[in-house]
Image (tube, rainbow, N blue to C red):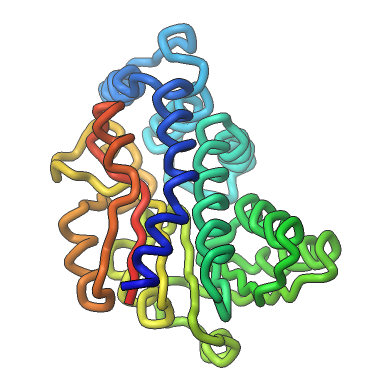
Length: 283
């Protein structure tokens, strides 16, 4: 109970900032949904029809529609890599990076954490922010980063050079499978695991791979509250993503955790969103 109350209190500030960012920067997300519907019908959408904050996502959706009409989707395609990089650097994804880093940092600053584990670190944007927070707070919690792509080793080398006072290790881990044994062997409890947008590419079942090692789990995934697919969901399914629902995610999480908290309920209601994005679970 004490841990639960400490975490809920700790994440109030990052969630307050998230609310402010999303209600001022994001505003109404419906133009993006309308654009997805147009693209699914084979029509193009002009940049001027979309709020500027959404343009990197529009560019990604436009490319998805074009490429999947002509051929198979290939993440190694230079066009895709460039658009994905721009999307990751967009103001909207900057908000997501800040709130994830802020939430994780708030937890480890208020609780004794034995190991931090990042699932799906990608290029390490969130990781870098968390490393910066540890250095700023004069903390050095062992950090394990993982990703299914071998490039995670280069990400680790870059971070190790930038933050020589921190203990950072890296492992290749496809979360459709159990964690590698050498990763598990490094864990010191309590373990705080965090992941950002891994489940759309791995499915709900990945929760069963991640949860056993986590004492605290922070998830950042768009989970449909209504269970109804939007045009945006149908478009992204063309590149192999899974439609995620709140109810199915809860079914998996409840097998492992005694307390599950939807962090962004106020934000979801304020922007009339059909998805919840931030979830914290405790054993």
